[in-house]
Image (cartoon, rainbow, N blue to C red; front, side, top):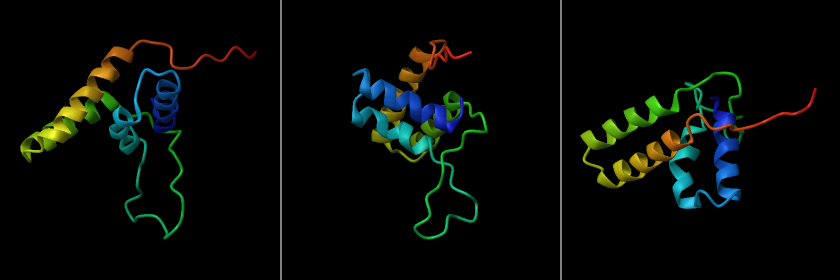
Length: 99
């Protein structure tokens, strides 16, 4: 999915009561794609709606990074996030009935 689709999914999960704000924090970080040169001061970074990202793989890599640094708190949060992603895999995230 794209970063925009992830953000939309997270917001829907929060609105539906399936996810708390605390549980959403690791996902919020994944929705941002910071340009290599950074953003101009005060400029908004738009959510990317073009590039598809494998968020399962991204989360697994982040878990390994934080595990190697001994950050057990981050590992626990990310493992929970990975579980939520895996549980949601295959579900319909959005349905457009317009013709």
